[in-house]
Image (tube, rainbow over all chains, first blue to last red; front, side, top):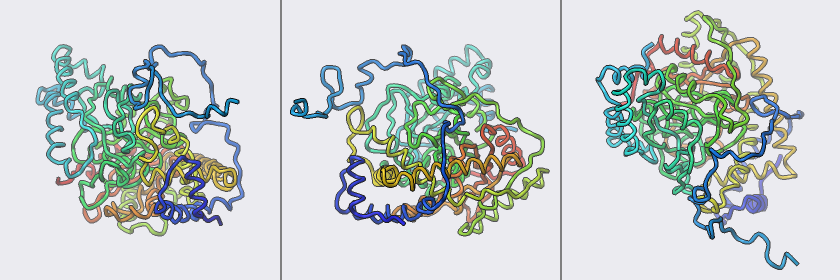
Length: 102
Length: 464
């Protein structure tokens, strides 16, 4: 049986890009442990799956990667809900620092 | 059968009402009663009145032919705040999206509008559709109009209440694990969970993409069918949607009652009313037999692995860059599900949890297929309990998850189901779940209609 520890909560919060207060960490440790204990009943089942289909039973199909002129957003529409834009583009934080390039 | 829709449209045809007078009537009721019930997040009154005037002009010019071209002409609806509506704020019940105004509408909203229906507002819900009571909304709880100290069920809480309280003719909700059927059962309206792949998810905020379905609320199953017939079918934007004509209605059905759906812990008054409804349907000449769905016990566990796994992925996109606030704005339940999903997908746990859950899904699907090889439809309760008290489960997420015990397997199997009013206990409504095979909606609607013709539970409305 798996138990969820404070370290587990801190690790998955970090992976999920969530910042938790100490009180939240404590609360989620208790609640996630209870939930994981409940879902543990499937962990012991001896079954396996090979899912190749979509949920509605069709084989996954691809479409041509073309522009749908009727359904595309203009740059202004695409930017209409952001608080951080610059020169007609989304402005985001650096992903890599300049020193990473060397 | 005289339906609410046909009554409303006959009033317009005969001149007893105009589209505008109907919109005004609903807006007045919302103003009078929704302050306490809190079923709406956004009211689109001005836009609705403008559209109503245009439609009245169209009717005066074209006459009754408008009802042929636009089958939902003059009907007024609300939509859960998961549905993108061009130019109208769409929050998913979360303060993270409190200022989000979509630049386009979902396929469902576009099809309803083209069919002549008028949007009167966007309804309250558990944030991101995570919940069974409506209490996880960042915009305040929605109250049950039958007893305002109780929950209306969730996550499509406001949508159900908007129909139950007479604020509109019908409502759109979403059902990923019971989020239409549970609130329908708790508020005495009809609630459809369609077959996965029957209706496009395009333009609806994603919760768990392999389980999300676009359901509706109405007073009668015939009305629910009319909505379904308008919104179903391929749109070119959701590759899981199929154009399938499922099994046609029959005069007499063979109906299965899964014995695993009458388990310990069920409220005896709910069990009595559901068994009475099954007896009534048997008396109507249908053959009722017991069926087995042996893996039912594993459904909740599988659901609460698959659903959070997909939630953690779908909510990954909300980083405050393209829309909304940053991730600190997520509420507790969203954080719980994101972390649970991340946990079950982690490399050390993915085989024990996620891959097992997917295998359980295959097992449950095949058990439903086997059952439907013997019966046309199945009957079951929607909820093991009556509507519970506000606050009763809000600090205990596991007990809240268990409220979905009779609904999640239907989403896992991908089949369709309808909650239909089947009686009252202590003046609180109870729903009967009619389950059909994939694309078996027409049989489900047909049986529900004949049950509603033989009973009058759905005609009862709450005193506000």
